[in-house]
Length: 134
Image (cartoon, rainbow, N blue to C red; front, side, top):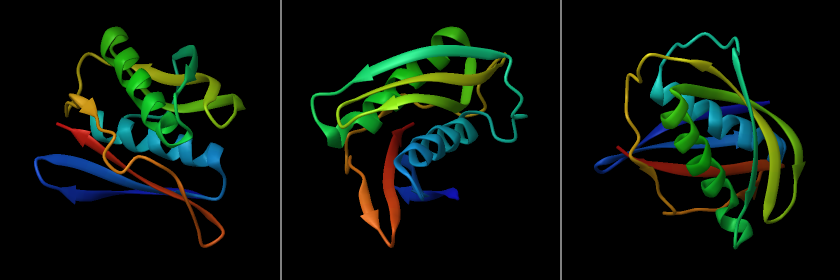
């Protein structure tokens, strides 16, 4: 099981993501970002893009992943809403992003911040908060 919910943040938007596994947490964060960019977009993929991300610290890998996915979204005009995880290590991941081409985004994200970056183990699962600079 995974879930996300929008959380209030001054001059920014954020999501709180909860999941049973780290892989599902990454999926939930990507899904939450997609829902912000284009609410209600059908989840049938017509685009796939392989992506590898390395981070200097384990606490920033998720943020670096989302920054890279957001950059690819803006360049290719694609909303990426799911992924196939090939490997997930402490400071790196390899995955294939699944998404759908769009003409435009309903909401913009200028950047993903490192504010509060990290993943917590909580209640037998995992939780994180992601803050979008909008």
